[in-house]
Image (tube, rainbow, N blue to C red; front, side, top):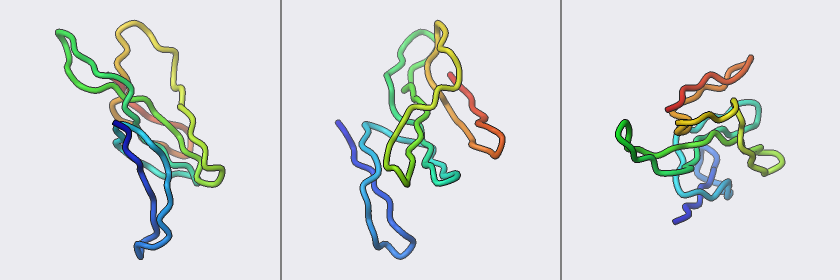
Length: 95
């Protein structure tokens, strides 16, 4: 099921559509970009049972969304768990 996500100003006006996704968590805005973790897959094995997420960047000016590739995926990669966008890069943890 897709869920629509919107933004609005502090007074509750100017509501605008931002992105459509099944599940989004851990949102951060930096330099006119909205960063968020978007659902990618269910993970169920002997070590872990959770959801896998990918890091996405939505350009608020261009109104375009792209996946942020942090490193080459290896075997047993389950997705991004948390992140923080700073002035010199992105700090993240994965599963």
